[in-house]
Image 1: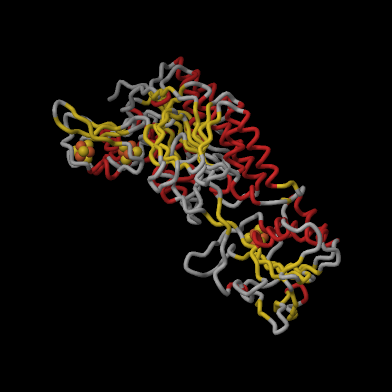
Image 2 (image 1 turned 60 degrees about the horizontal axis):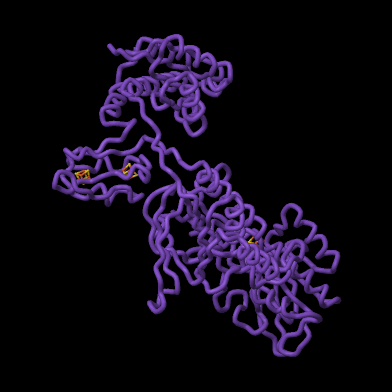
Length: 579
Ligand code: SF4
Ligand code: SF4
Ligand code: SF4
């Protein structure tokens, strides 16, 4: 018996669930579970009509628990929590049971088995709900100041955007000057805007804003606290010790915009190391510093060969960069337009694997072709070979897939290796911020589409090319997205965090430190309780992952909303016989 009053709603999801699960049988099997007073099926539980019906049931039947058996909580957890809230029910007394991704979609060939599994899952959800208690979100007051790490184009633009929203900004840059890679570039694609001028303009805008404080030769060395209220330490003046200063501050959020490194070919890679074989960055330097015709060692450059995908889309090697660097096709095609404009009559050959001048950048490709550039496609298993000839020129040998693998030999004055982006070595920053890296060693966002600048560390955002190859417009777009995310937290003055977190019973804890070492978020600290050391969970930092609870030898840790008692009752419910 139970004195709880629980409503259970089982979704057909059109036919996504009911084509493989007998939802009516599930309803009948759970309607007499202890505490259940309403058990219904619905074609779409997320529809407005069913949501309204739930609100009505909660109010009229005075429900104190809600279970929806439908899709993944990733999709609709918050939808149904809102339903509970609208009806005056505490949203943490709601349980979502996933009978779609974890049942109907995985057992499409076993109607009876899928139905039995759905019954067990819903019973488990009801068992958990019977033991729920009302919980309140954890409220944290926020500090209206943001730390921006990295003063390249993304970090600088983020700083200006934040300042214009009325937030104070600490902008720190590891190098002695601001601007990052863009500050070194002349004309950039697609419009030929000058990188140096763009950075100078941004720098001016930063100087005009009193609420931005810029530190160069500065690094973040310590961070504690949580979203809305981080305590940070910045080391200014390099790491040699001399003239060094440590600045402490409180910030509400942190935006990481540390940029990228250029891929550096190894000696011999496509002839790198031979005089005349340049990376794209080196070639751009030559172009940017030349007004008229291009010369190298006093000799006019008449033939240029570009070899694409150098250091990107690698198939082998110790740690191959498997990703496409996205910007290099466009940058190389744009550079070749710039080159022929300076040197009319210049012969240019582009040896590519795939030409990825996507979207409007396709116009650049057309323009390059109209200006005489020749495009040849090679097979990555048979890459071009670059050699030095006796007369000092270079020879590039390639099989062109567009002419049925014809062997073509091209004499060149310069070979440009179209190199991509690689992640920077952010070693100490990774340690300080505890930010996860992806397989490619760029910083990882939570979800590339739905949460593209958020990280698993609440209040820490990433933008620009530190999260993966991006051109400068894309970097700025993501910087502005990070600005919006930060401002949406800090302008409100407080944040509300999930209360489904770990808690330590100080009476039971006999400090052993197991939980502290197990917590991936550094959420557990040692405190004094009645004259002895015990563990305490920092509510604002804990993610409720549950990693610590099973490790505690004293059984002192429980997870709110998923207590041991709840977990045991769910297991019992799963195992109950189905008649
Ligand atoms: S953008 Fe082009 S050159 Fe760069 S990695 Fe992708 S396909 Fe290769
Ligand atoms: S539940 Fe996870 S995040 Fe919270 S204290 Fe335990 S291990 Fe750390
Ligand atoms: S693992 Fe348990 S006993 Fe050990 S410090 Fe943590 S809470 Fe205390």
